[in-house]
Length: 422
Ligand SMILES: *[C@@H]1O[C@H](CO)[C@@H](O)[C@H](O)[C@H]1NC(C)=O
Ligand SMILES: *[C@@H]1O[C@H](CO)[C@@H](O)[C@H](O)[C@H]1NC(C)=O
Ligand SMILES: *[C@@H]1O[C@H](CO)[C@@H](O)[C@H](O)[C@H]1NC(C)=O
Image 1 (cartoon, helix red, strand yellow):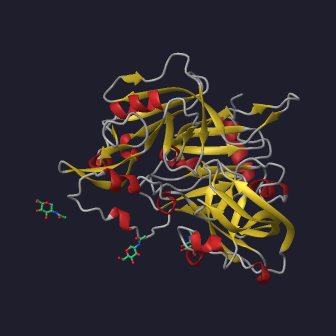
Image 2 (cartoon, rainbow, N blue to C red):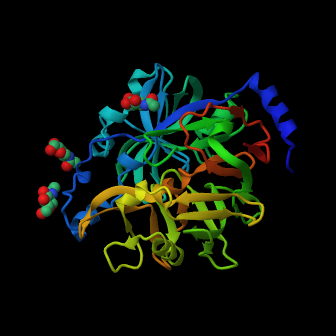
Image 3 (tube, protein in one colour):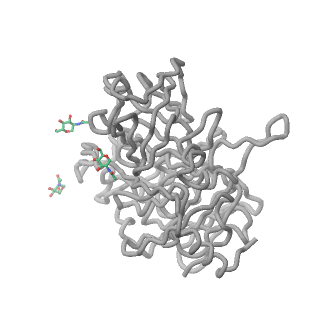
């Protein structure tokens, strides 16, 4: 159903009176990083690039500031749409000393200083999809976010871990426990378990998340709603783990005519995940795109894995681009990703040309990796996660820093369909 514009305008006016929207900045830490100081004349040796291509969550993921406890102790946590737990490092624990960004920068929690702390005394060993794991206790305490307070929020107070580099705020679907976003809705701080992401462009230091709202000024064209793909349980009911959507066509543009890079019957489940820095596509498709964009696999001669691109592509605003189409090819959303947004960290130089990491990673065929639309994709989209109704709204993001916010609440029924502006 498409609501007429006038009705939407009325809806927006009526809601403006009592908007329940929580706005928070999401930011990329500007941590001094020795690995970017590659000698301009370095050759791209396997050793140095192997190290450099290890994802650096401290540089590329998005962080959100919250407080925990009473009085609130500040924490910066990695915002992760792909998981559903809150992980907070315990003050003085080994997790703090093993973190990539130390607790004295991002915060840790001293439960003895909180009057609202409650320990379930239940130990947990949580494993994330990327293999990282953490040990600690399930605890309850008050979480503060942009001035709002959620009481009795369940979290893991982490004491040790492996491959875990930071505290996490997982805002995925509630499992057997409620997420922060779920509690924001059930404690009436927002009207639905939903949030909107605007990561801004690759070069920007921060973006915005709106819990329970969306910003009409941050996208262009229609915000089109598509279903989240769930899995069917033995008893016929559905379960939802992540914001998985149906990718139905990918084409590249270089000049006027798009070149379709996927088979006619293509349909691939793809996860919209802020917790992954690159976009991970299956080998055949990734290879076609790497070729069409003028990137190349690295180490040279590989046929999957990492790719590199001349860094100067970052400043070419008229370069090639990729169109990602979702759900129904006629009525579903299309997000355009220009090459300039797919140029990552400077890696070194080869034959006098400076090379950067390419924003698409090629999953080896048959390895069973999921397709993940990570930050290099998400920065181009305005993405509304409507978890109550199991939908995602997608539109092309607008980067203009001078636009005036036009924030509306997402009502209990979820995103109003067919919001068109401009
Ligand atoms: C980065 O360089 C500084 C100054 O040379 C040094 O103290 C620090 O240990 C280096 N960090 C890493 C991670 O190598
Ligand atoms: C790179 O090589 C050129 C030519 O040999 C030299 O002039 C320049 O100083 C070198 N740059 C660095 C950073 O070493
Ligand atoms: C978040 O907290 C960090 C650490 O205290 C601080 O440096 C940063 O400015 C804060 N960012 C925002 C957006 O509040």
